[in-house]
Image (tube, rainbow, N blue to C red; front, side):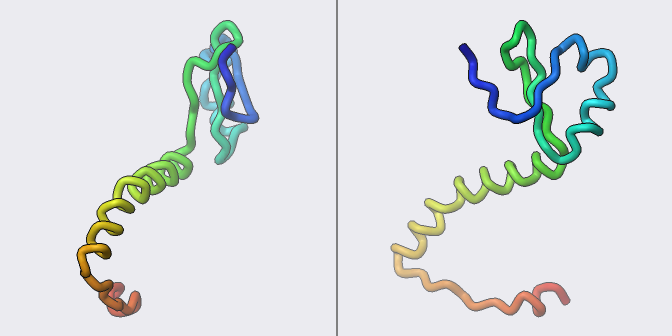
Length: 85
């Protein structure tokens, strides 16, 4: 049995009839599209996709940051306002 990783689901038949309706109804929440009661794919809003991309980047860059700090490199203090000028 496959685990559904979302609170909302739609059957593939329903989804094919009007995908835009399901996307609109889901808002910013992801949902699973099921075929024979098993997840075929997940639909994410652009905002949720961006959030996942940031989490993946953070996960990938963390070891690099730890290694650089362990090598004796010191963090540089930065004023965010100066960067935005």
